[in-house]
Image (cartoon, rainbow, N blue to C red; front, side, top):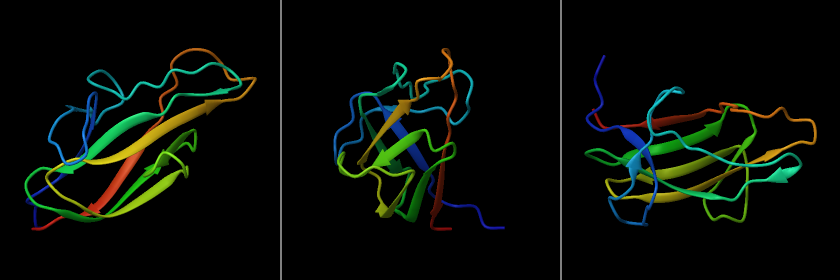
Length: 123
């Protein structure tokens, strides 16, 4: 099986469109630099600006999906859904946004949500 020459990573912190800044988000649910979303019951969180970029060469047909539908995604911070698609991601930041919401009866504490990323990369 061929190994991709480029992979995709998500970055948080201070990220700029077309830049190469930000802090790489960990790819595991425990420890590391995770995406943290704070919210209260019966509310929606503030939106969080994230970046996605490839390591060495553009990747294509990227699909980012929220696994539990509690994390909403947007390319423009206006239209929100549980899945976004990006045709191409290069070696500089492409920006997208996430937010979440809580129902009246949500329990308090850490709840781990997950995003999956599917893409085609050069081999």
